Image: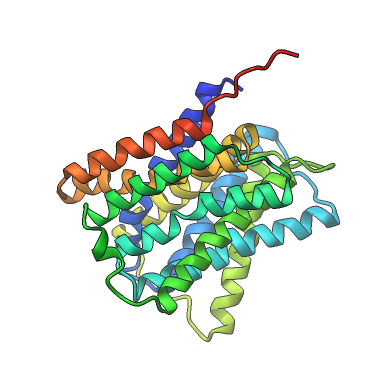
Length: 300
């Protein structure tokens, strides 16, 4: 796959995920957080099954090892991530929470070094540092002290848990796509969404909640966006990039999610774009370039 096409797919996934922050705000108006998450991934599962049938004509059969990994993917990337994410945002402001979540590429790179013996080059570390500073500037609006003016509590730890669970999802996905019986990105995302939906449904039943929801146009439109663009297309594009570039280089594009969310907020919610946003976005671009810069060939 051409490198430019890989970057386009990763960028498209990030743009789609940026819009999910706005869609999710409308989705929970007419139902609970857990039911909204279930509707998102159940709808995405149906959309992915259709796409998979049109693309391949069949649903690949899984062996025992693949079933084990698919359950872990659904648990980490769908169930745990969403439960931690929404629980954390109940007590933590959005900017501070997004900063915690964007620590994900750091965990992915460290996990890749630990589990896949991937060497961390100094230029990659510098790129991650610049991207982290850029995201901090964007989310704090230039007031860094505001992000750390309160004590760390359960909400912060929950958001850290969501960041770690996505890192686990990314690394498990890479391992399954490069195993002896590999799954392609589309099949992997389809199966993980199905397993995650089942686990979310089990969680709702065990926690004593109901599946009630008002099927308003706002809810249905939000779920359609979250399921089709934010999940079905976004996840497939993301894992296609991870498969080609590697987990660390693919995951660094997550830094663009808060930037795209703020830009969409400007377009849709009439929010302001400040100097700190422009400067932070520039640092993020430089950081992503450094992490993804091709290595120079060395003479034998």
